[in-house]
Image 1 (cartoon, rainbow, N blue to C red):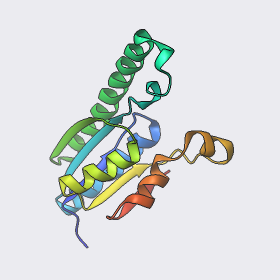
Image 2: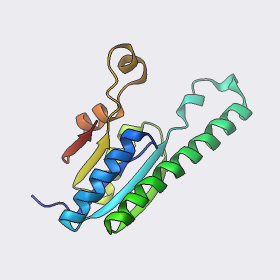
Image 3: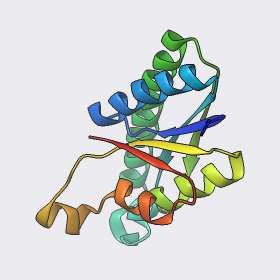
Image 4: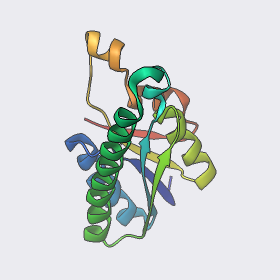
Amino acid sequence: MFFHRILVPTDGSATAQRAALVAADMAKRYGAVLDIVSVIDPSPFLYFPDAGGEAMAYYMEASEAAARQGIEHAEDAARSAGVSFTSHVLREHGPAQSIVAHAGSSGCDLIVIGSHGRRGMDAVLLGSVAQKVLTLATVPVFVIK
């Protein structure tokens, strides 16, 4: 099996950075393009309408900065590997659904994603984007811990 377009989602975490390195290496080996995405989910404030505009502005500003930082790390990995890449910030509800939808609309044939490995109550409260991507994806998913 050969891959032509590899999607690597990033949240700027150390795990996502490792996933970007693996994805860049795979893209080099297969001659594939690396598609880098970061998802900003504005929905936390939809559930707290009384939180105020300042809180939403702060959240969005911090999210944009984290997205840019995560993308820059992944772009550096792609450049170091000498592979072509595209980068996107998605501002949509549901990171896992957005990642899977982007993979489909962009023609990605592999998703390489980092997993924080949350267990117990953390997994229940915070959820696992990687787990949801595994469940929803129609293409292979390579999970990096």
